Image (cartoon, rainbow, N blue to C red):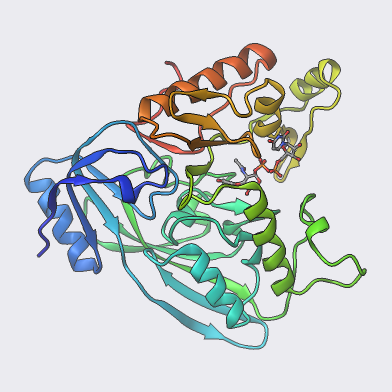
Amino acid sequence: MITPQENFDLQPYNSFALQVRARYFCAAQSLAQIQSALEFAQANTLPLLVIGGGSNLLLREDFPGLVLQVALQGIETLSVDAHSAVVRAASGENWHQFVCHCLEHEYFGLENLALIPGNVGAAPIQNIGAYGVEVKDFINEVTVLDIDSKQVQTMSAQACEFAYRDSIFKGRLRARKIVLGVSFSLHRQPQVNCSYQGLAHALPQDGSTPSPQQVFAAVCSVRRAKLPDPAQLGNAGSFFKNPIVAKAVYTSLQSKWPEIPGFAVPQEPQSIKIPAAWLIDQAGWKGKSRGGAQVYEQQALVIVNRHNATPLDIEELATAIIDSVWKRYQVRLEPEVQWVPAFDSTQ
Ligand code: EPU
């Protein structure tokens, strides 16, 4: 049995540090507690919001139902030999701590994803990625609880339909499954990925192949230099996705803006990914504010809570950026952060 707390302050549970409240809140440390929380929500016909670390959320108003934080803990090695290891982590484990655990045990592959805020359970939902690596490349299986049937199910990586910052959990299965744990297939022999421009300069320049520990250290230093620490300045990482456009659209943008950066998209040879940060930066948004919300000076893709921002301040700033980028480039930015209630692109 679990007894949710009433009229609960969510400020410590969202990395924007917005002052919003939940009608009910509980943190579940076991499957039984999750099931009990679901029964409570259903018995009282309450809307349900499942959260992990709260680091990719824009809570636009007080939540009128039950906020359920999945706080399951535990990391176990399921199999290991000289070449590979399969490691399972429970949803509520902190992502960065899990990356450190893997590196300490010489389970390699996740080093580029160091310092991403949030918990393990969110990793498959939005297919977290950074510095040339996406978590989908290492996910073996995802264990979920089906909200309707209350059955625990195992989904293969293929069944998760991973794409750039996307998965079936954001699409067809949105709000239908609760991620309980994730198993990862990792390397035992170092296989570093230093392909991302911007990472190389933080690595030793002596021509040697960097070790996974060096890549980890480089990623941490680049992230610390560019991205604000949510513990010090409220934010939710990249606020927008990098838009993916048809090659022809990119070519026509290039004729007007010759410096516009563009990157190939794996599995989509006819498309180009444009850094949203460049579009926003060139449109003059760096450092601009609406109320207490501000576009971060060091990285135009991040919106920060500079002075007690309200959800509306963030929303107005984000909407003004979307409109301005649309007017200038005819490219439609989409939030990467999950809005609750959901973002409506027709607004
Ligand atoms: N740029 C600007 N102005 C800026 C910042 C960047 O013009 O203020 C341009 C530069 O041309 C730069 C390019 O944008 O080369 C790309 O910038 P950066 O390498 O910083 O990466 P990003 O596209 O801004 C993405 C992810 C980040 C991830 C980094 C590193 C998305 C939405 N964001 O950012 O993920 O850490 O790459 O791999 O894909 C997150 O999802 O929360 C996140 C932080």
